[in-house]
Image (tube, rainbow, N blue to C red):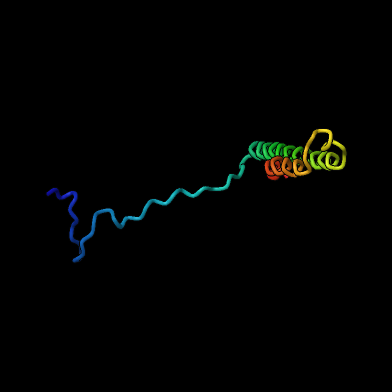
Length: 106
């Protein structure tokens, strides 16, 4: 038998090599802090650009949700249901398909 796979005796107990070694911990992630004035200006510019982009996407989604809700209200109270040969349950059924994807943008 090979010695490399056999357990060895230590202090009266049978232990396997490397069995009690702790797993290496992942390196800690530090927060980025700009150091120079150039880095501070670049960091401020990037953050502002990201903020405006996110704000624009959310604003457009909010406006589209409002427009969609208004249009559904007009459709439900007009003669569209009769003109399009729809049943009264078709409007709520269509809303159940349209609104779930819009909820994350609200």
